[in-house]
Length: 120
Image (tube, rainbow, N blue to C red; front, top):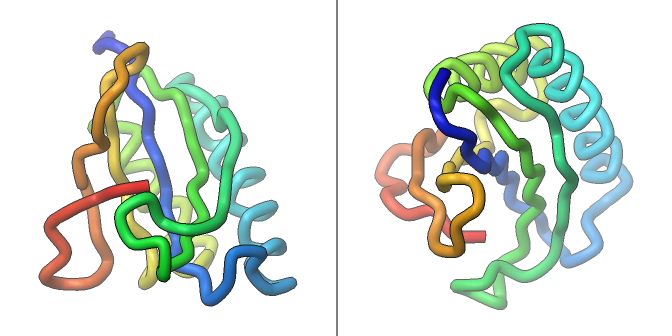
């Protein structure tokens, strides 16, 4: 078993509060990911936030945070669940950071080509 990691699933938003659909998306993504991570004994959903991006306050994002025990398997599972559930797989980014540390997330997956950075 590997060390624990934070895993953040990020979606872009058009406003700080998001739309009704964004709220629905947040609830469904959290529900599906928590069930899948728990079932595969890879971790759990730990919460979410939404609002201005820390790097660009003019952009808005929704972050769903998970604590995972196997980073690579968890990333593969998250991608599979979101793709198969059709939960806006073409808009997401995934970043990870070692659990218990303060620092920056590392981009592990971006649905859009050319994205090289991940920030909350």
